[in-house]
Length: 93
Image 1 (spheres, one colour):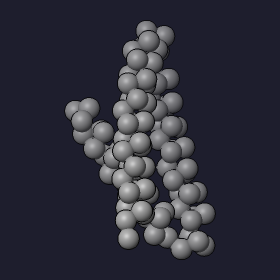
Image 2: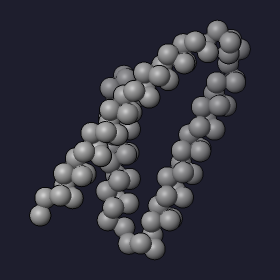
Image 3: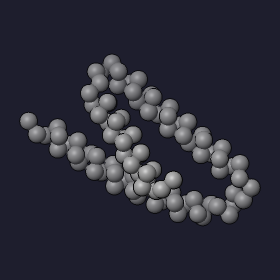
């Protein structure tokens, strides 16, 4: 799997959530937020299971931390871009 594919999937997932959340009625926003947090928790659980199932966990800690900081920075860029584009859409009449 290419790293760009993961970024595109993350962007699509985040944009879908934001647009759904913004267009949802007030009574549905709590349910959407709970679903978002539940899917994040399930994804984190899968990462924990996969990480601890490997034999050489300590050898991979440095590699994972470098990848994590890289992905976190890319996610920050995507989040900033999405926020700016949503703010621009809300400002235009």
